[in-house]
Length: 237
Image (cartoon, rainbow, N blue to C red; front, side, top):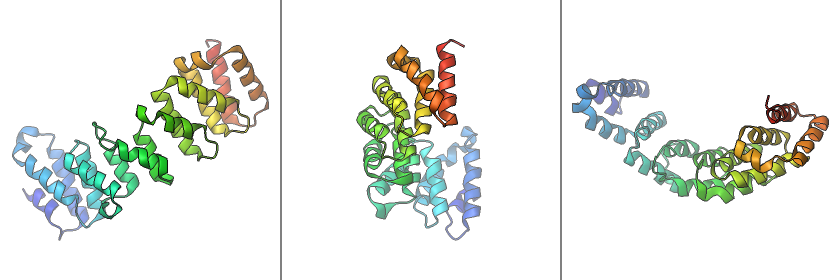
């Protein structure tokens, strides 16, 4: 009871209120003893999600989204759709809403992945992992040499998760393009080597010979190392 009151008291400093929240969270591991207080704890957390203190809001929404709390998810969606209602940073909101097992934020994530920038766009792409409806977006971003390297890497990873065939085609083109980013080429070679379905679609004698040629001229240690690993796996070592 004392901890619940501390959590709900805006006159107290955030450190005390956050400490109370952590103690209450630990008490939840004793479900029978905590049962009389559970509903009130959730209610006070939901109210604290609207607190004036940013640290309180972030910590509370973090805890609520771990249990797929619908009210926390609603608040996060509203903040992403309307900047004036944001309770946490956009990137953090994406991270927290991405925990929703029902994918209630997918439409928002797709829009931000296509039109956002910087950290927000990266987090939106990460939140779309496994989203088959974003396959064309992943494919376009992964193949676009004008895109930021981190964006292309995330898009490549996502594409491999949703379509082996389309990933294989993009990966092959990236690897064989001498003007493409060497770090991304190295990652693509590694993915081909360690994903049997992709290897079956990509690896031919011509491709293997091309990799040998690339290894002999590239100055990238990462690319040379990935090609070496690929060659050893090809030999069954």
